[in-house]
Length: 64
Image 1 (cartoon, rainbow, N blue to C red):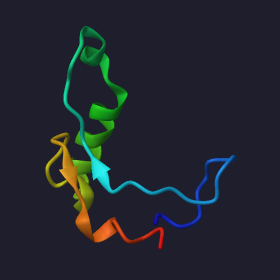
Image 2 (cartoon, rainbow, N blue to C red):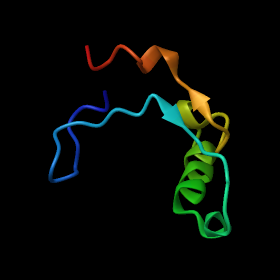
Image 3 (cartoon, helix red, strand yellow):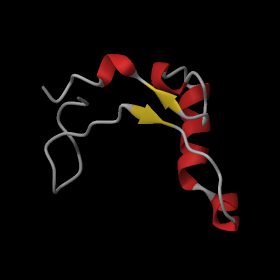
C-alpha cells in the first residue's frame, strides 16, 4: 500500500490498477490522464504504460 496518505479521511491508499479507457466526451479533459502522463515522464514505475489500463499484480496482496 502507499503507506501514510495525505488524504484527510483515510490512512492509506491502494491502487493495483492504473490507467483507463476513454468512453465518453467527458474524457476529453481527463485530469487522471494528464497526471498519468506526468508520472510516466517522471519515470514512475506504475506508469511505465502511461494511461493504458495496467494491472500491477505485485500490489494485489498489499491489503493482506
